[in-house]
Image 1: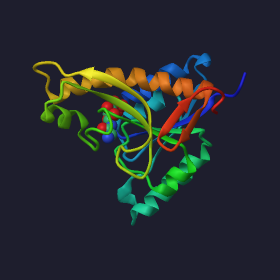
Image 2 (image 1 turned 90 degrees about the vertical axis):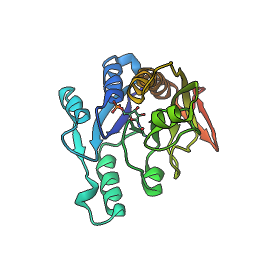
Image 3 (image 1 turned 135 degrees about the horizontal axis):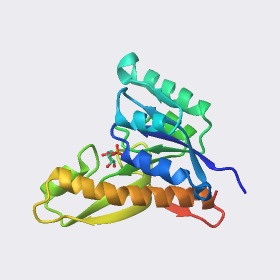
Image 4 (image 1 turned 45 degrees about the vertical axis):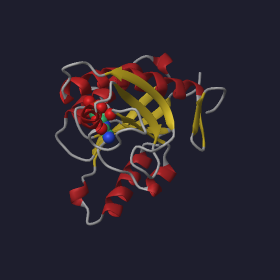
Length: 205
Ligand code: GAR
């Protein structure tokens, strides 16, 4: 059996997507292992979840560095130490540099159907726009904001009476399932990215 795919997961908040991956990785058949969890701030539930699971953690706060490039390089250095096959940005609220992205294949999950509603407020912007269907997108991170090649998407219906919190919670339920499914398939079957086309499987690893 091949070695499990090594995941480094980056978080900034509650870490429910991370938890879904940690739970999935307890099954050896899943094909992946979270080898470290990194954050851009201390004292968050995402880090506590990693610690409870016995996974090493690290924090690199932007405010501890004189420049953004310095922060980004320090983040890349610590990530590199864990030799990831894949970096998963799961609610990590910082943009990563092209230097970082050249080193690590990095996926990000976004709570909207890209290319709609990029940025920090996907659920709010979808609600404000009055869309009837939104969702979540897993994509390969590129230099833009939520613009990278799309790996997977899941639709979520906007209900009458939804507010940002209720809509985001429903998106997150679908998002976690999508993330776990796609990362597991990538771990077991591989991934290729050609331009904007992402393919999982067929020996793509
Ligand atoms: C997720 O919905 C994720 O898509 C979103 O933050 C949430 C993190 O939840 N990310 C973004 O909005 C990035 N643009 P979690 O910390 O419970 O996994």
